[in-house]
Amino acid sequence: MGIQQRPLRLWVVSNNYPTTHRPHIGTFVEGLVAEWVRMGAQVAVVAPHPYWSPQTRQWVFGYPDSDTAEEPRVLRPGYPSLSNLRLGPVSTRRMGLHPFTWVVRRATRRIGFEPDAVYGHFLLPSGYAALELGRALGVPAVVALGESHFSDYEREVGFEFCRRTVRRFQGIVSVSRRNRDYAVEVYGVPEERILVAPNAVDPGRFCAGDRAALRRGLGLAEDRSLVVFVGHFEERKGPLRVVDALGDLPDTDLAFVGEGPQDPRGSSIVFSGPVPHTEVSRWLGAADLFVLPTLDEGSPNAILEAMACGVPVVSSDIPSLREIADDDCALLVDPRDRDALRNAVVSLLRDADRRSAMGRAALARSAGHTLEDRARRILEWLTELSAR
Image 1 (tube, helix red, strand yellow):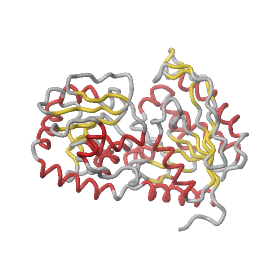
Image 2: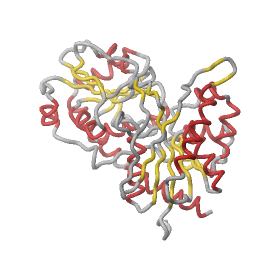
Image 3: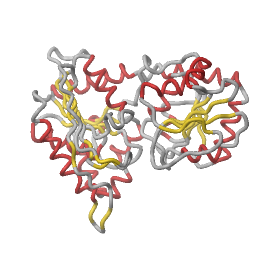
């Protein structure tokens, strides 16, 4: 099916979107929106930011709006975040939904067109705000369930609140079969409301390159193995588990691309910190291996990006990863098992032929996860939904 004659008009709500202070966050949402615009959709993005950023430990009272004639227009209202705390029976996350939704609704007055649908990325708070907008405007509200799990939400705002909220959406984009099954079996959502569309990668930005040249450009040794981690520096993603398992490997350097509360350190670490999303592919292309001992995932973009760069993967044996990677291109282990993680990495570093074969398989598999294909599927589905 093609896109309807009049372009689809879409409002997107996302609290996870690139900013001047944090240009590397939410790039997967930004990329999806850019593809929709390229395909002819009319899109506006409302991307609220908290006045206090716990990541950068800065007060940010305002970002300039994107006032260019080019789409999408991005509105960045500030709001008073109440964090995610539990004060006896009261959840500040649930209380914080109201100021977030209020600033979203206020910002939409400046968009300049009415939507055919409202799309919220992640259930809380963006999905909730999209739901309230859709109800007020009488158009379908859609949520993208890209969460790695829903237990935090259920603990903080209550299971019944989560169940009722998810069931109110006219459509759900699920990044994995696991999330779809949870929505159907636990929350009671009719399966026909759900589109399963795993995350995807832009092959124009992430592709195999000259490893030696990339290392020279990054100032890295060409005669040592390089293992790269990309992700948030937190317990769930596991950068410190990487340091513990691999920090003393001989002739091996480690690079950590990201930021967060944890601080990976060690004599073998040649880089640790955030980089612009446009630079991530250079680090991946320079790597012998990509490693991510994550405890839980929805659909990890970093793994798809590593595969698109032709890099073998060592990661976690969990359902969502088994959906996108197999034994031909990845070794999946228990992320809490230090020895299993170390043995998997060592076995591949010692076997160049196997690494090459896995890299080729990763490239081939990533070809089935392109951003263009994913964006088109979702856009056509949204068009059908709004027409109904």
